[in-house]
Image (cartoon, rainbow, N blue to C red; front, side, top):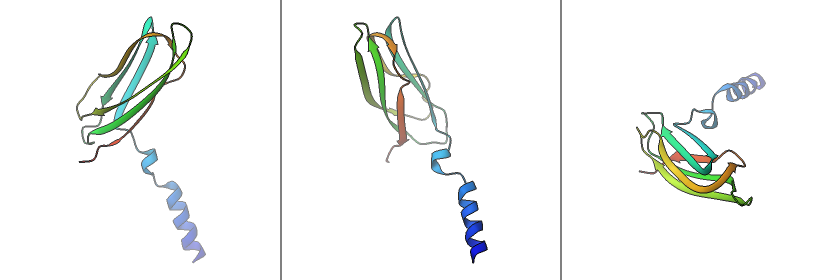
Length: 105
């Protein structure tokens, strides 16, 4: 019995989980020259529609911190969708945080 439990534990540690699965989307953002833009693409044609949220900490042109946030849907086949665009920013204080999950049907 101990051997079986040890093997089951070892298998559980080795098997990939949903957290380790590849994300069906790719996003990138930049803030420079007074503006900020966040772009996303749906990169897995077999994955369903993605419901996404984002948060992004930016430095404004008057040297104050601003956190922008929003939601968007990313349909299969979408490429280079502008999900956020704003003006009055000098730089990004952190990388944007994007969280997506399969949208309910």
